[in-house]
Image (cartoon, rainbow, N blue to C red; front, side, top):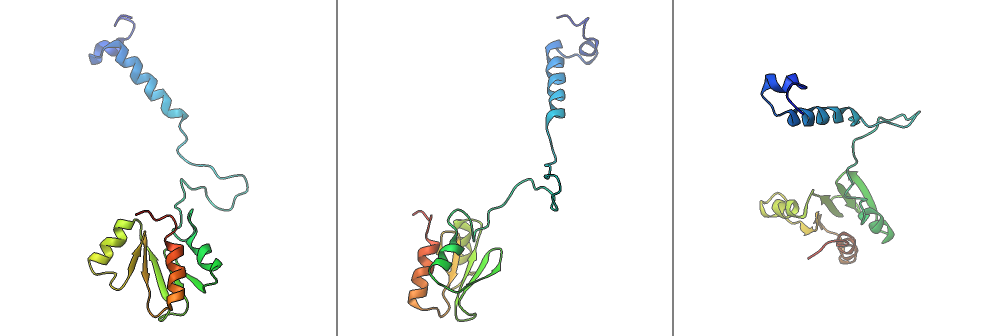
Length: 143
């Protein structure tokens, strides 16, 4: 193919094949859907993704605690209370196991036991309760 057929290549000083590649790449952008679509009649907007809850992710710590007949209350997206506060155990989930360890090391989680991504504040919970909690939180934890 000569540059006579592609006057843009001659004016810009590009190799004619490069112009074709640029045109082809620019044309591909029209086929990409940027906005997710919601199903017809849906009340909520569609989301680009879903963040797994640390409470109910694939190891479902919340279900495990309830299956052990522990009185668990959800206090927030990353916080559980087992039993009555302030005597019952409190569980706070962090994004990663390293984040949990960092909070313990820097002193912002004093008195907490790190189990995977969870910080377990035992408070005055009984040994039997703590054993059940630790078993549930340890599901899926490696190392």
